[in-house]
Image (tube, rainbow, N blue to C red; front, top):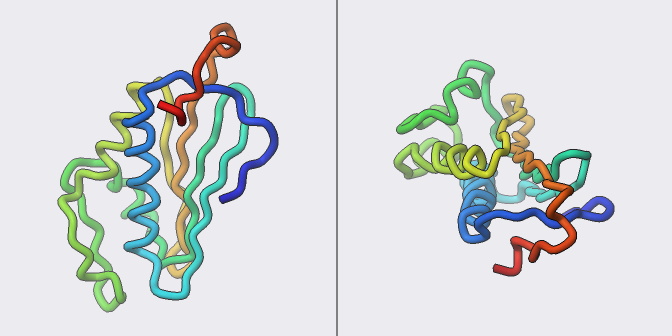
Length: 138
């Protein structure tokens, strides 16, 4: 875990935001072979808090990245140690809906054999920031 600088308070539904981040982490674990590295990074780049889950796993081709956040999409890479990973193909769609409901954005950067970085941007409402309870404590 790497937290860069001061992170402002973000108002949102804590249980849903935790679910979104946990999904990214769970996917990183599934698609990173044993001995790999997974990092969670958080930083504030006004006006948004960026949360990244990066791994040095199998990575994705461009055409696969474009389909990732659609319902029931499962990317299979034959011959890879993770080719038999189970799932419904709904996890990233749920993440997308949660983050968009919070006014945020999601995305991924990836390269085959070099890993992936899945990110979330949550825009901070500076007007209400001072009196807000940190979302992580709910």
